[in-house]
Image (tube, rainbow, N blue to C red; front, side, top):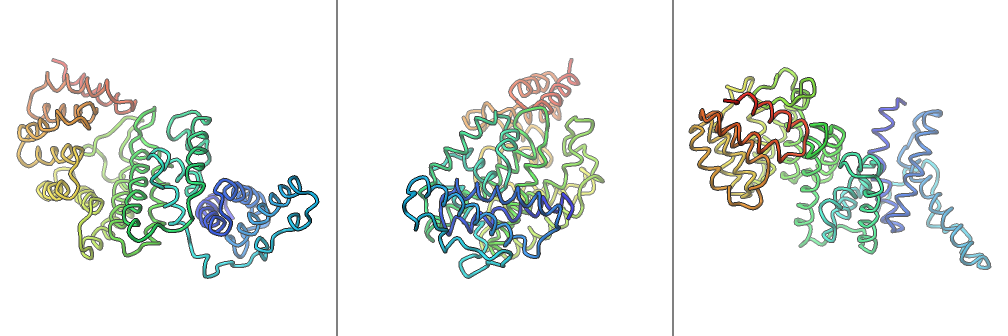
Length: 411
């Protein structure tokens, strides 16, 4: 078993084993600790003995034994005279290597995701807990991804666990399920976006974070294969992630229009196009992720930037604005307007966003305005907008790119 294969397998199995323990015994903290112990044991033993016949059963056996050991120890401390409490509970006995996939042990990863996205948690806490419990990332890895001290992230995750400690480990009621699934998809979407374009720090991309979002979304898609909005989100991620190798040259940002499309991952593009095409053909109601995926597909299928079907992109943005009105959608739409009706029309559309508090101070509004002013020949104003955008972004690669554009427009 190679290290890469072993790491991928352990990451895939960890949430399944954690979900089984959670369903049987409850207690997220204790169950997660037991799974981590089992993963450490697997990383050591499998390297020497090879992959067991039933890796999931092996992990579940070891994790359950850890729980039994801790229960015995705790019982011995609290009630040394009570021999019953010192015995290993029968419910914790697992046959080593058994498949252990009884009627109640189907893959509960989706239930675990719902728990991590509990409405009592803030979005940052939902993301952190999802990465820890479902993604299998260490606290140090999560802290590094979000550029905060490990102690800060440990406190955030600990508080999140405490908040959901008493929550039942079951799928939410039918009348709440759709809303909670939307929260799950939103968390995965935000996770991918942070990995694809980091909001701050020295790197433009955090491929591990984006890749983990893709993996978890694939998992949700396998569990809900008839939910076409889940398919839309996965397609959007695949079509966007396919461009990652062309987004930087010598650590410098390369805009979409200037990327070397020969570097794009054609396999991911084909998979994403196929998935979104199936979703659009079978869905009864268009969702925002499906529409965003369709826009990404139009870009990815163009062999050159000048071959992009901009009227189709604009039509899809019009639909997206109706389905999910959002100032960021309008901002992105302005580029399509510029390509179909000219930069002046696009600038007029941007003016409608100037008083929107959700976007007025965002660096992307000024970056797009600068791009449109440049296309309109207003170089002095473009330079000013580029400088404002550079001042407001916390991403160093984006800042360097914007400053270069401003320097090029010096008059």
